[in-house]
Image (cartoon, rainbow over all chains, first blue to last red; front, top):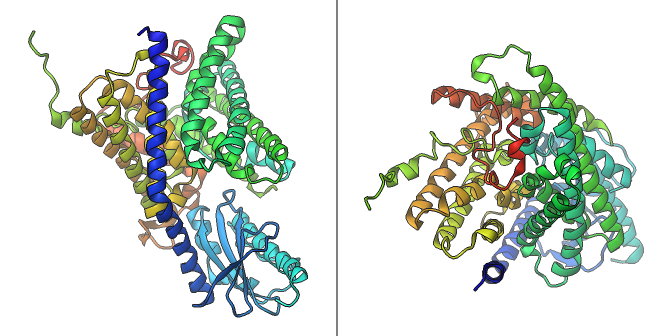
Length: 172
Length: 197
Length: 225
């Protein structure tokens, strides 16, 4: 077989085999991956908002990944925010039935380690508790301005989305 | 992300080489003189733009609807490798002066973090956009600016390295270690852009 | 015809760890060493992931070395390497999600790590499977060692911890955990390692160990000037 035919043929075969094997691997690991992500979210939810029945709501708001209800009147907004790294912050912002922030929980954060530690402190996150107005300012952690901005932005988004949701479903 | 935000972050605050560490090998290898830096920079901008132009639609219009997102790595690197190979052959035959200016750097960019990195980041950032065209144009803008940022870093560094030639450096650090430490200082200067935007 | 003196299996394994360390001596694969070395824990994970891909790709490429024609050698190797990287992505996402999100884009970028393509081109395509696997393990461990050295430097001096355990407490230099720290730490480690193995520090990022040296015309006027 001349090389001009043999070479592309072999290359195509290699590609096809690799893709087939990957499809197989995908089948085998997909459930495991979904379970791992579910578990990670669950751990964060229970750590921040206590045990309970968490159900994801079908409504969708701008800037929010998911809205979760804990059955007790608290709505939890799952948000991906950008701090030091684009889309590096995965957060949960809980807003209770009075429209005030009940807790801000960081699921995972890809910012640089010193910054990440600084913004995960209760001193920083605590300032958002009880907040109802999305336009309130915030005190950033010095040396971690972008990470602080990301989290504050997420809280603002959650409060906006809460108001939007309340307009959609006033008696929820 | 706003258009201004994209331009600012790709060139300054999230510079591909000095902040994200993608594309270090050509950065450290080719930055000795301004002409070669310009040639390399031009080649990088060109490859980044064209790779994004091809890989972004492939991901959004082909892989996503078929649920084959996991084939992203293979598909992207193959597309980049084949495309660069074809372009190099074309440029060598049709435009020899252009080949001498930037064609020689093309193979080096193929297996390079910067190009594969920019194509992956583009789909991470923009593939979930509501409109395909909006996302596509923003992705192209990001790719172009990333290349410009790379070229900027390269040119600045070429200037720094020409000064290093005449510096008195301890023996153990001469050569690559001092180049890396110089790069760290240039990177530090870019950190100053963090407050913007 | 008498067999020329072949290096021992032990040599194939341990050469990659120090004397021919692909990263510190060969100056390959620098992007991950600069990017993922803020915490020793993540650097270790990156090193082991890369080693896994390297062993796998060396194994397959060595197995298929007589079947792949030279004209499509490079794309074929790239596809095989990309396949192993995607497999590693699945495994980490499912079994070690924290490491998966810590590595981020750089996990996919293992595909273009010069070390892997370099070993495929220089070694696995010309040697039998056993030697290729040993070479892969050795080079991978050497790379992991480089990652650990640089990340320990950055984490201990930059954040005061090591693998998350507090070492120097309050006294640290935070800039080392940021971007400039990566370049600085690598520069220092390369200088020290070269001194230890009694070699001159490398003057240039030359093309000698670059996997694309044959096809790249830049070697005649680009990289090594």
